[in-house]
Image 1: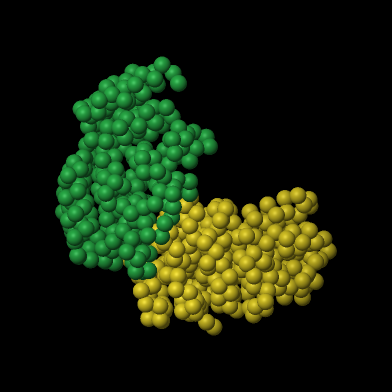
Image 2: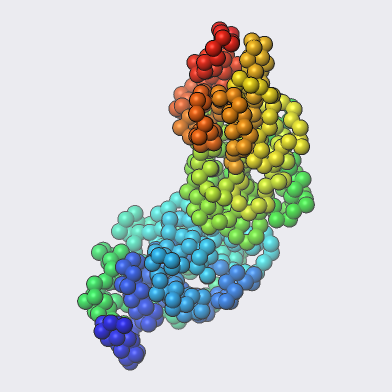
Length: 277
Length: 315
């Protein structure tokens, strides 16, 4: 262990009171990506609170039996945010510290986009945007055909909503009354930088979905929203528009621009640590 | 003569009644003939919509829940438009599917190139866990589908509009096996699809002119029957490949790889070199492209040397 690592570990044990929500998880993401020199930190930071909330409060799963027949399915359609998923899967027992140590390295099971054939808990191999969401819809359809009660949650990016397959799938899911299907849209403003898609909530409503809006960084708001969804009796699929901030939690990473796929330098990692640990 | 597409619909009923895991998803095609399946297998038939990439992608999710999806639509849309979905959602994720196309090659001859597909054999052969079938009579589809559909791998069945009309021994219809139609010494003809009929006619004509043909027909494209191919070409040292598929990859490539170590082999090839900017009937386009007895004889004359045999083959 080098001096800098010792320094961070010491920081990691410091008082946690001033840290943002899920600061520990954010710090693990930054550290993992810095060590391997691969990853999308801001994309992971905009969804980490949502993914953590789902695993902590919503999803049924057995980490030592990832294919458990009664599990709920979580599909990270915006696969480039997978660092957030990996760190949550670590916290909930799907992955080991060794898996994280080998992230993006030869022989490791975790890459810059998730591979379902390798990663316990990753229900789909995503990365090419516009694929995970239809896969998740197919899972929901398959469960419905078999009259199983499992639920399916897909997390997609607002930029990903530029893809045509998102809207094809939205139509099909609505037509097929996939009430067991939930789309969580990480509305972090990426699409606005490229091909704007506002008003997003109106679009999902127009495609026949029940729509909910929530602050994706507020656990109480997430709890309230998922309680409402759980009590819903409509046959429509549910869209949760999660208002988020890209890079949320570290001031100089927040927003759009150079940090999208940037790897922190040692000095920058120290600055990240100052905000998170 | 029964259409192979009708056999597809009938086979879905036959298997669907026995296997509750079979799910049929179509892109607004064959809707009428699949109604018996829809009625006899309720809740397992979906006319999903005109959205082929999404149909294929959703089928991967359906497969993930343990069901066996069958996806059916026109070849250029299911294979070429949805190729990334086949590659990633089934290939990368190691999930199983049965893709059933109609309208391959230039079957939809009067509809133009937007409805043609010459690349499907090549594209669907790039996956280690794929199987490619070209059943060109009803019995071939029925037997091959039953043998393959629940192998949890990628099965592609290209259904031609026109059956070849040649009666085959059902006992010889096996996955990965070529069928020897005629025994000969002078020339191997490797043929797939409806062109079996044309190749067989040509072989009779050639026989009358003193040239015997070893005629091999392949209901399975991949895995390619290398053993039968090698055995024949090692004997004849001449091979003519006839395939309604792209000249730039396909059966000819499989043959070359099979016999690459043999010296002194002569090759001929009848295939599709470029977009077919022509309309007309299927038979008219066959004549235009050389998929005819005359085209076969012409190709033989230009490709092979027979010494004293068969001078002046052209009809």
